[in-house]
Each structure stands twice: as C-alpha cells, then as structure tokens.
Image 1 (cartoon, rainbow over the protein chains, first blue to last red):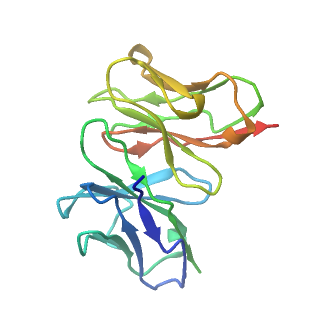
Image 2: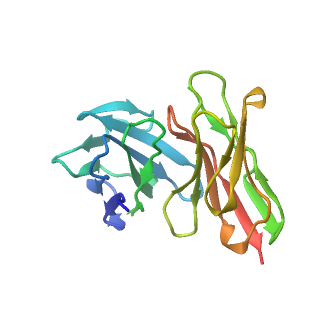
Amino acid sequence: EPEVTQTPSHQVTQMGQEVILRCVPISNHLYFYWYRQILGQKVEFLVSFYNNEISEKSEIFDDQFSVERPDGSNFTLKIRSTKLEDSAMYFCASNSGQGADEQYFGPGTRLTVT
Amino acid sequence: AQSVSQHNHHVILSEAASLELGCNYSYGGTVNLFWYVQYPGQHLQLLLKYFSGDPLVKGIKGFEAEFIKSKFSFNLRKPSVQWSDTAEYFCVRRDDMRFGAGTRLTVKP
C-alpha cells in the first residue's frame, strides 16, 4: 500500500538555525499539507498546497515558514531561524482530492530546538 | 472558521467496557468528518469517515460512528474496548482539516 514518507525522523537543531523537513507524498496525490503537534497538545494545521501554490495557511504559518515542491516527488517545509517553541512533531499529509478520499499522514519528524 | 470540538480529554476504561467519544462540529458548509487514531509511537491512521449516505459509519477494528445532524455530533463508539485500543483519537472536519483537541484513551487490562 502506498504511503507518505518523511525524513528525517528526528532533527535536532540550535535556536536560530534553519531546518528543512522533507516529505514524499503518495505519487498520484495532488493536495499536500503540513501539521504540527507540540508535545501534549493538539494537532495544528499549518498549510495546504495545491497546484504549486499555497491554498490555505493558518495563523501559525508566518514568514518564518515556507513550503516548496522542488521536484515531482518531494514536498518540503522550511523553518527559518528556529525558536525553542518550534520544537514539535511535524506531520506531512497528502490527498488525491477525489470524492471521499481522506488524508494520508506520514510518520512525522520530531524537531527539537535547543 | 468551521471546527470540531472534542470534550473528553482523557478517558480511562477497563477492558470490555463500552466506549463513546464525543465530537461536535460547527454549523455550516458541507460536513464531511473523519476519525483518526494515533497509537503510541505511530502515525495517524484513519479509523472511519462520513461523507454522505448512511449516518452510521463502520470503521476498522470494530469502531463505528453515528452522524447526527440534529445534534451536530459524530461520536465514536466501540462496544467492547481492548487494551490495544489505548491511543489518541482525533475528530477531523474535512473541509478545513482542522483537528479536534483529541481524546486520550487508556484501556486498563
């Protein structure tokens, strides 16, 4: 069964550094998403992406964040100048956009900012 | 913005007990709803979904949910829980993919 993959599984970075979280969505999917889950808190929507542009973003997704689909398979989340409060689990998801199709989630990347 | 709310933050049950986790959605727009589960150390998996048709939806692992329009609810149920059902459960509305706060279920053996 096809699945969404994410790398790395765990990323440790120092405050102020830039990180890029990578996702490979399911190959025939058209909609892509990033979410984050701070430890002990709810899953929060960050951004959705379709047709090579952001279709929706939350208030969390400020200028510190950006997304890109650099080639036909990867979908990346870049966090510039990381802060301690960016420490969280980041989930990528994809969806075919057809009918009753649900989102398929990746295993997540745990980001630790020290 | 449309949203869902889950009122039970942590539910503790013994094995074989019946389960009902609440989910309420806000009025307006097309209502398509999911329940996702996150087992310890694993990623989010779909339990079941409602788009249209029969309001009683059957999912994996013996779970079901009933869409009750008059109550704006989509509660998750299971008649007899097992220890392996220990997990975090999320109600999600498809049109904005906002997650509810989640309910942590602990099943005692």
